[in-house]
Length: 277
Image (cartoon, rainbow, N blue to C red; front, side, top):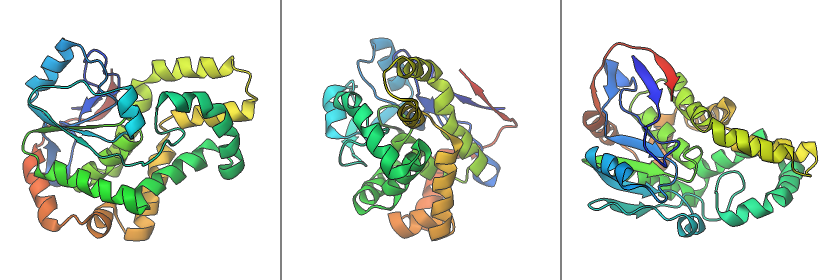
């Protein structure tokens, strides 16, 4: 039985191994090979030890410079760190630098005027990441690192939801994971961070902002299915499939896909799918 399960590691609240996920040709993703996460800030020794035990040898940091400066990754001996900021500047609802928190009220008003709803805004930002020239170059570099790596690779942003979620969607698609499971994996970020979302919502409820702005801000914290499904639909409209997008925009070849599946897949075990904390 396949379980969407977060890793039980101190100070890591949305970190999970894709191992066991059903994929192409009746196979599943190998354990201790592909890990998605939020920030790796001030990790305790026990967490570092457990990550090293998994064979971790590469960390890809998708955050902007300010986020990295404010919440630097814990350095782990023997692990290579690569910085690929798929967003060049602070972006409301996605980047998590301290200064953004202070300006969110102002940004909520602007986003309300420009996009109407938080849903429209988040979907537009995901499409921007996938179809703008600079982010596309960095997504290409990210996938190339994952394809070429022979150990365990971890990619992360701040919350582990948006940028890390987009990379996970691409990797899972290339490995032949069913779209429903890809969406479930994306939505799992909401369940695994429900305490954080709850207290953020409480903070918004007692804030002096008018309700329509509170709705915008809360929507940007969520991991709604429509954020990733609308993004996948746009990819299909432009390229026919996520795999075709990876080929046509990110330079992934059939040989690359075959290599990924050889490295990261193994014979399947029977099972279903559910969330587990």
